[in-house]
Image (cartoon, rainbow, N blue to C red; front, side, top):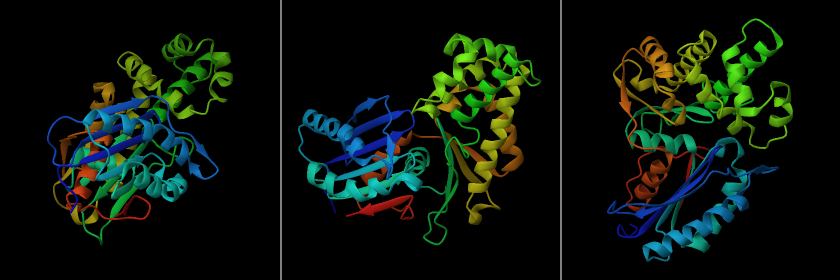
Length: 329
């Protein structure tokens, strides 16, 4: 067993930036944290491992210095895209983190897993993580049941109900109003032009950006603000709520399907409040009538620390999965 008085490191890398936290393995005291709003890039091998290390390692060394320590007992890196774009991370991170931080134990996790761990800890249930993207994850904690992952396909192919999805739908409704087509929203057109400038220039502003999902998601709060008075914006959020509930229902592990189970929601999308949460409660009641809604205990960064702490104390009970959660000891 690793020393429970040692230090553990959690990393949360997503579409809206990267965060790093250092804490004690025994849970005592406050965690030290660092963050940047700039997301890690992707290349031919997927998520850029060297780019991530160039950000994480200096931050981790500084946090260790502040904590009066020189090494980490365990590290958990949670990254958006780990499942489909994580080949470079899996190839590069284990040796680099072991060499640079002395990490004896390492977990590489999808951000869906760290969102789950932050929300429910190591309890059976379903978690929907909706920020820039969206993914739902369920487990009964058995090796046979494993993980049930739903959506998380990215802003071009899925992430239905996410911040990027809501923002794109809102911008489309705004441009429909600009064109004079049906289904347009003058209210959202006004917000588009207040945020991005003249509507006709939006493609030139958006398409060259490497962080398009984050830019789209930045418009989601405008949809939420317009929804109480604008039927088009309200309709977008009702559709988003249906997508979110569908993902939760599909991710529900079969052994729990006929009983009462926990469902937690986590991520920035839910901060838009009642315009989304009102229709979402109705959809969850319709699609998961036996579910018990649970307040998420923490966010994906807290989840990364939770997994790292479980590694350090030999208490990890999550299913191990080559793509969703791999462990290197």
